Length: 202
Image (cartoon, rainbow, N blue to C red; front, side, top):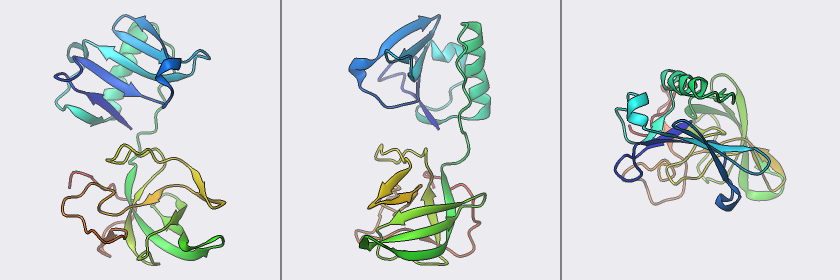
C-alpha cells in the first residue's frame, strides 16, 4: 500500500487513499490535523493528515510505501484525535516474483491463457494475454492491491467469465526504461527466488 507526500505541490499533507469514489459524493470531517474522507454512508475513502512533517519523519516525497513503522505513527495520530477506525492494512509486497506452474487456453478466448502462478505463499489464477507466457517461467506478478506505475489498481476480476487474481507484467507495464516495444511479459532469470519482492526502482 502506498501513501503520498508532495509538500511542494500539495502542501505539508500526508495523503492516505483507501478507496476510489466519486469526489462529489465525499464529505470531510476534521479531527485535529486528521481529515477523514467518507461518503454519505460513512464508507471511508481515505485520510489527509496536515502538518505531516511535525508528526512523521518523512525522508521521501511522492509515492511512499507504507511501512509498519509509519503505520504505527499514523495509528498514534488517530488515537490522539479520538478516531477509532481500524487501520488493518495489508502491507505485504504487491509486486513479487512468480513461477508459472501451469498454462491452459482460455475456454472462451483463444488468445488468452489461464495460468496458475506460484507466488511463494499461495498460488494465483491469472488470465494473461501475452503471447510469450509459458510454464516454468519466472515472472513479475502484480498482486491484488498493487498500483501500477500508470495508476491502474489491480483488483480481482473476470476475463471472459474466468476469474483472474493479479497480473503477469511486461516491462512496459512496470514502467521500466528501454522496455521492448513487442508485446510480451517480462521473463526473469531462472535463479530468481519465487515470492521475493520485485522493486519497481531497480
